[in-house]
Length: 93
Image (cartoon, rainbow, N blue to C red; front, side, top):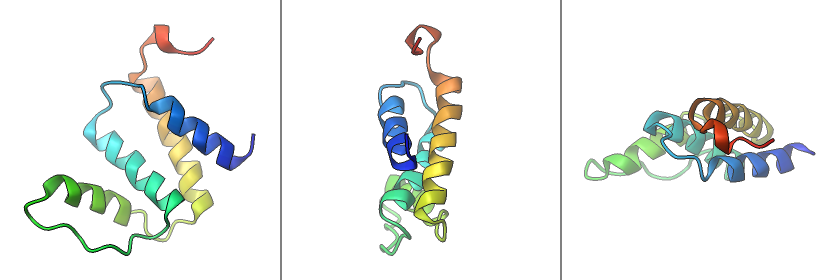
């Protein structure tokens, strides 16, 4: 598979996994947004939106990564999270 196919497969594989920490989810979110949209050019959410601010920060921290770099890092991050959070019986054969 190519990088884009691996990226899409990683996104699908992590989706049903439960119990992923907020910090790990934010890391994946930032990398996913950087890979699919590019640098964050949106306004930072206000103080009354703490969840939005953390998501914005996670994405903004990836500024400057190329699409390919973000995809590669996302795939690696997903693999770490799968190893960390996926129940043994849920792992593919």
